[in-house]
Amino acid sequence: MMRFSSLARPALAVAALFTLGAADKAPVGPPLPTDGELGFVITEFAPSIYQGKDDCPEGLAGSLRENFLKTLAPPDRTRMSAPAGEAELVKASAAWAFGPNNTNICADPELFPERATQAEYKGKTAIGLDMDQEKGGCGHTEFVGPRGERGIDNQAYRAMGCTRNYRGVDGKAGDIVRGAKINLVTGEHAMVMIVRGIDSFDRDENVEIVFASTDDLPISDSRQNILPGASFTVGHTAKWRNVLHGRIDKGVLTSAPVDMRLRRIFGHGGLRGQRGEYDLRDARLRLNFAPDGSISGLMGAYQTPLNVILSTVTGGFGAAVGAGMDCAAQYNTLKKLADGGRDPTTGQCTTVSAAFDVAAVPAFVFDRVPAAQIAGATK
Image (cartoon, rainbow, N blue to C red; front, side, top):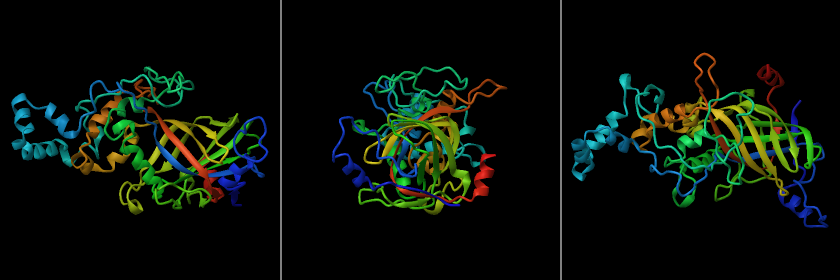
């Protein structure tokens, strides 16, 4: 049987309810849905970025060219750094991106363990969740959140927070955030969410959350903002349909940790990275319901080093030479800072804590993955 995730009222109508005869107490979340369900389309899913003034005292992480120049003897470095040496530098740094058997540092970053790590984020503040309470991880210095939250785990940002694609100019987030938004708008990473069993936005101890990929293309305006009120179906396979269990307390939805996978193709029709996906270990949500029907907050999860930089890895040689990415340095830094997924044999941690900004607007969502697939995925 197909389930229909209802949307009690369009966002504008919901907002209007609170301007008519508002009670003394501010409302917590939108009106309760009559069937206990709300559907959403995800409008934001990107690494959480926090930029302080003195977070990168060593400077930004080096590009491929910059890191290559550091390996040279001073006379060679001086010669290639001069305008007359530009052609030699381009050729030599491109060659440096390759290894044996035509491997390259972006398509195969794990095959270059001898390469150096990169400049790390040294700030004390980062966005994220406290995630290392459930399982023993590897020791690390925890961050303080922007609002003074203690025990924040986000080692992925410690590794990547000084890279150019994370750290934009003038305090704005870098290309990693803009790219993630475009991938939602184009449908390459489109996601939906259903919250079921809602009895109260003030306090509800048991709700079910379906967080899934969708094959449907979101509807957006001329500024590429995904619009509310459209209809979607959960993707045709249970592989990217994830079920979480959580609670609501004063309009804040939190969930227990669960391993999640979400579709993550690149290029029109998935021409690049067709088998790519978000591999999110011990993922959990902390989202705030708003009176207009939207929801926003954070997802915390552990990722493998390779999964953190998957968008660059799929670019292969072009990402290294064209965009100047030193994926080997990024991978080696992420591996060094791993704080989760401890291998019982070696004692080494294999995953890094990470945080994602998540936002969504109301949508009609059909949960139509065949029941047999859902049953098989949960075994």
